Length: 551
Ligand SMILES: Cc1ncc(C[n+]2csc(CCOP(=O)(O)OP(=O)(O)O)c2C)c(N)n1
Ligand SMILES: [Mg+2]
Image (cartoon, rainbow, N blue to C red; front, side):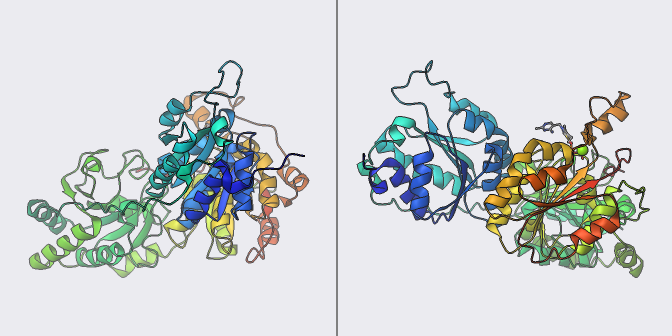
């Protein structure tokens, strides 16, 4: 019987050593004949391996892990078809700016394209996905190129690193010894805001009766919040965030929550009254402006450290190129000099309006079909406060997106970064792997669930318990919205009913069908401290259209 080479003497062993040097505890993936030896070497080196049943889920897990744990999400898939299957998750991670490193094979250097039916030209595929591609053509290249790839991923890129199969199976090269020192962190420093821009902004804020301070992901640094809160106090402004920065001002009295299509019921009329907006670190995309219906006729002051972001999506009255915290501090200084006093939003009546429930009702559930808003607001109360919520895409996300509360931006993820359904399950599983103590809840439509059904078993096998809420409207519901708008018949957007509880049970999950709020409450009790997965197949009304808001 042939003896297997000791892992450290092979390229796969050298790569496993590199993972250990990067302090990688966990790797996600789906094996192929090219990468099996690498997965084995990594496991033997002490890296826990979570295998998926579809590559989109595997890369999604690395994305969710990186998002929730903040570190590098490492994943491995087989070359060609594996990478193609992973394409949408790679695209999603790249669009979200995740630190994800995908390790794959490539056709052999002496390869014959005709014979190797798995081979495709990776480089243009990866480029089209918006990720960076690193290729190690010889054994000597493997370690140095890997280190460059890992460094790029560590700095915020989604990266694919590929090694030809013959190289991957070769003995280790001399290069696999000694580490180059890591590159120093580069801190980008934005310019000081100009005095003219600050003066113009102060003038507009002075003239404004009902201003809004809107923060996006670019204003998420912890030191920025108190400065923005002070600015709100000084100017009598409401505070609000984009969808991605949601709950940034959690606990602030004048926090209206999300600004845009996902605004809550109490926020909508207040935002209609805003007469000046100061925007920090937000691109003002169509979600935030609710399809450009918000801020149509009010002056907007936009602060961003990236000059290309200023005015990119709408016309802006004052552009301030600076870090959010610095610009806010300069505005505060300038405002105290001109003595702007408090304004009408800062009255008890506003506080009373903002304390009202996120959803004003009424509950339009029927005898055996639920109103999706009632599901989300009920779960909002039953779920432990500290939780991770992941939303797959589809019309159902309007309910969970608008009517649930979160601890902060890090505990909520919508997964439509690349516009795809079916991204939620992988990202939720990865988030659970990164933060095992936090209950993780996935909201997913019946379309997204059937696309990723097989990976329910991945939750069980890898001991990554999730609570999965299937918003089952027996339809590609988003397409129903389009069918109604375009006067088309519903035939191609409706789906036969699947009993997801039975399917999940067959895959090893505890599961139940839910038709009433009472059933929901019964099953969703005791979610705190749950150590196994639970799938709730919630039958919701197909004919109830919960829309994003616009003004
Ligand atoms: C990969 C992918 N395929 C198709 C679509 C088009 N699409 C967007 S939403 C949607 C419906 C999703 O149905 P479901 O998961 O049941 O959610 P619902 O809208 O019914 O709440 C579809 C098909 C897409 N965005 N991405
Ligand atoms: Mg549906």
